[in-house]
Amino acid sequence: MALLPILEYPDKRLRQKALPVESVTPDVQQLVDDMAETMYAAPGVGLAANQVGIALRIFVIDTANENEPSQFRAFINPEILEREGELVWQEGCLSFPGVSENIERAARVRVRALDRDGNPFELEAEELLAVAIQHEYDHLDGNLMIDKLGPLKKRLVQRKLQKRTEARP
Ligand code: GNR
Ligand code: NI
Image (cartoon, rainbow, N blue to C red; front, side):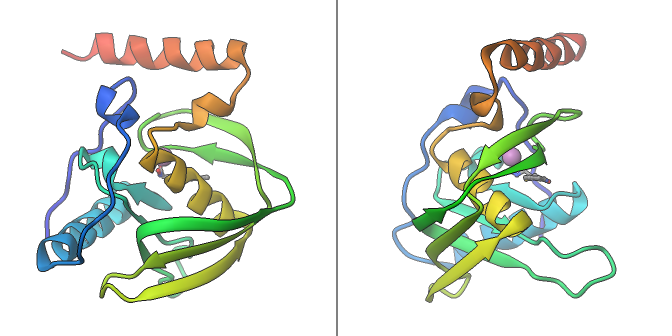
């Protein structure tokens, strides 16, 4: 297991579109395990492979609270089959430290993906799980939560992160 460094905006690799995984090899499983460790250490609710500089269509999510049993899931080559309704959720992103904004998403999604063993599964999600699935899915296409903000808020967040980056050698 290994902790992977998480890229922060405005790192250009966050804008790269990730490519499908050809087959779920031991290397891919190792990456999933390292992403899980990195997500829990952050701590975060989810993590997409682009956030650790790997342009593959993989994300991991665990929406369980601290005192609840794990609900860990790996999503490899995910497809969102259906989106229904609307909801607004206050979102954060590990690539935007200190940023938390209300974002509009679909209220329910139906998703299909391969799990860590390479087996296909389908899942219907709502609330935080639905939000996280859409947030992570966006990462795979190089889309970021700030793209869903109005132009004024977007620029404010961009400036804040730009300053942070400049302040760090
Ligand atoms: O840790 C995270 N929390 C979170 C909260 C609300 C909506 C989405 C998220 S995902 C985020 C981790 C992250 O940046 N994943 O890409
Ligand atoms: Ni994120």
